[in-house]
Image (tube, rainbow, N blue to C red; front, top):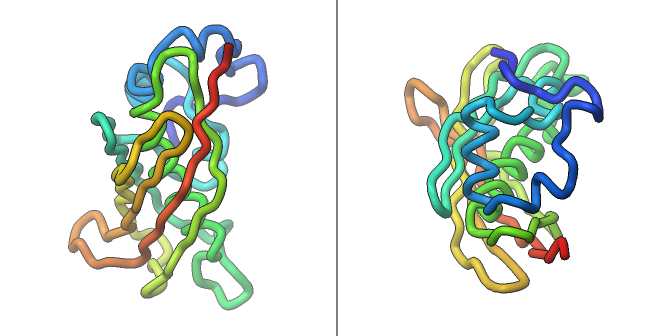
Length: 162
């Protein structure tokens, strides 16, 4: 399940002015719809945006052998990258035109190993969206059975591009 719209080079990324010309919600919808290139990390880590609503973003991903630790299970960084992405992008949906975010910190709690080849759904939901910070929580669950594999939380810094 590779992303159908990842950025393949810096030339695929929108110029900063174009990103700042739309609200965070419009930006995330454009990524979901493939109208602008999704993040290159999505192709590397095998995940993509599948759902966008105000204050909520959903990614789907499937760990492969390339994402394993020395014991053959998905590396903790795979969980962290997927959860950081869905949570921070949920914050992005609350950001006004002319602004953007960056992750200040995030925390991940892995409850069990995701079997290789199992598609999971990572859902990020905003808990607070202020003028300068956003806070979100996330869950990583099996796409078919809903089993909980990991949870997370994040704090993002919201910045003006002007």
